[in-house]
Length: 148
Image 1 (spheres, rainbow, N blue to C red):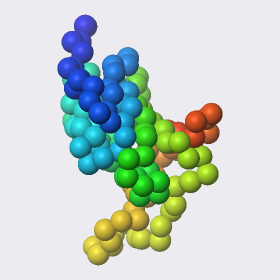
Image 2: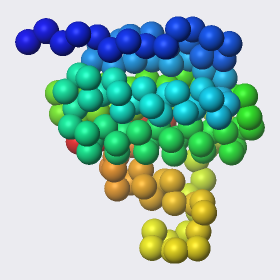
Image 3: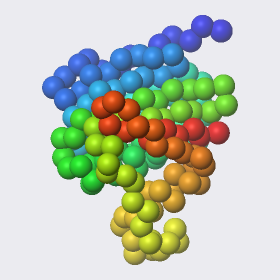
């Protein structure tokens, strides 16, 4: 079965998106606009390649959490590379940032806290993408996740 590649947005200041096998790679400067576009692409592109909507929405949440964590830790306009694609066993998500020494922080917020506005991101990752990992690179670090 041949699947038609979904249309990606044209390059714009702060956002450069390209196809990759069964997904996309976005090079971006973090802003509300670029992050919103990448979240939307996660759902659109994955479902276009046959991923069930529920799995695509879970990947969308993972992208949102990882990118949001990077912005909170490193500040607005941090350069990120977000890679999202379908695999034989699910969905892979990678978020690459330029600061290897700034590692994800596991907060003390319980998952069932009705009052918490933040602090549950890594717990969400543990549930949706158990076994997520951090890999160092020449230009920073990658947080790699696989959603089954």
